[in-house]
Image (cartoon, rainbow, N blue to C red; front, side, top):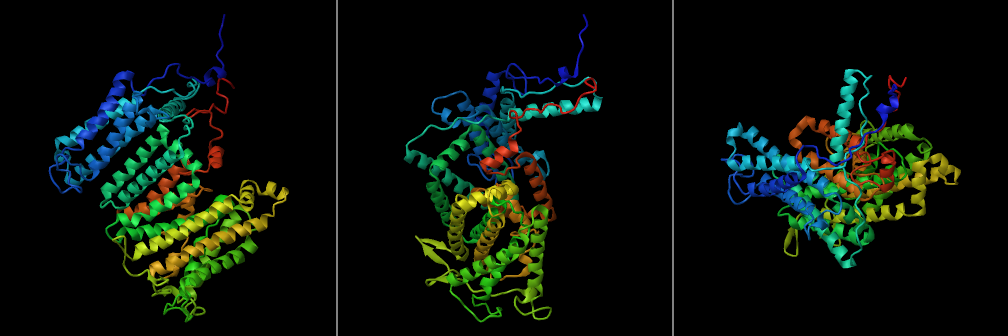
Length: 614
């Protein structure tokens, strides 16, 4: 009897019967290695890692961590806790409602990468491995031991497909590499954790408050990092540490609690943000905070246009400029062509109203276009606004904007006798100029969030979503597409003008160079669009987080110089490859991007016949 092998034999998926790890170490010793390595990592943080204080952070002290050692201490403690929780110890099982082993792998990876990055930075800055003290070597061995044990923990391997013997050697090698990558990714995947049990409302609110306080602490630490090595280590620790908490199921449970208490979460988030200036000893980082809020508010307005209505606007920063110019001209600046000094409430109405009018004037003739054609028109509008502002200097055109010099010497705001340009004292804490504007901008951000939330849940918001998903079907159902899109365009423009009013007073000067399509300094149209896509289109918190990251990270990575845009582009490419729905995705969009996935990490079946099948 002869057995014939067909192509179907080579395309049948293969799945391991027993769960195994990436490394051939028994489960018991592997778990002990991961947990013990995490504990030893904590101990190593209290030892000296180098002999000289020339490396930033002074890692020469015994008994007290310094600089990057604090990050290694935290990631090591997280590894230890998750390792103990994976044993099912009573009282710690609540830390891992999801996949304890996947969370342990990410935590061990966080400790390993942070520690080894620190040791490599020490060797590079000081001139070799000879500058390491025994504490540094202990940290290297401990984190490597923890990572080795974590990778050896068993997991359910995803389906893979055997190699077709009729393929060439190169094709077989590629197929094996693809299978290996699928298995490696499967080690770090986790199923959706079960929904959390309902707790008393006050306990759930306390959990939300604790999470917000932790977020404030992490943000304050990150924005206050004093040198480049510490900020890079901070990014590494936060990225892998957050992934560990997500795989453990804690992030999903927290999201469920915040969904039950949306108003409380919103109020708590803004109270936590309002506490930020009180954590600072001077006005240095409040400057970054107020610019982040301006950037985030404009990004949230763009999210109405792009995220809800699905209109690709590449010239949105022009509406920010219209609001800034309009407000600066009526705020008493000596460079203004109009001798007018309106109070703040009137100036902010002028700025928002001017942007609203421009939004209607630009949107009315162009919103009948779709897709790339609309993007090109809006890009042209953004450049036209900048060029008109550049040439309205009295020589090349009418004397309105003072040309490239812009509107300068814009006075500080005064509201009910409160001068935003002076230092004040609140509860004994000195509050400087930028902190004053931080509180004002936080209030405006709250208003924009409420507008976004109410409009998104309204009838017009559902019409925006319908237009975004399928404009032809929406028109067939009786939705007035042009009117709905024009409302989105005008509302987004008005919100940008609102933020532009405050920006004009914060910066003292409004110039055309501030409102370009792409530039290394945000806000500009490219960065605003990237903030919406990075954070998650159609959500409230997504653009806020995306804007904060895109403003803070380039500000802290200024040492990259001309390579900043390269690093930014590379990060966006990686994000679009591995998480196209954004950091905080809308649930509907997340399902759209991943609806074709069979199982986490599963290799898709071949789509063409093999040579044998042919």
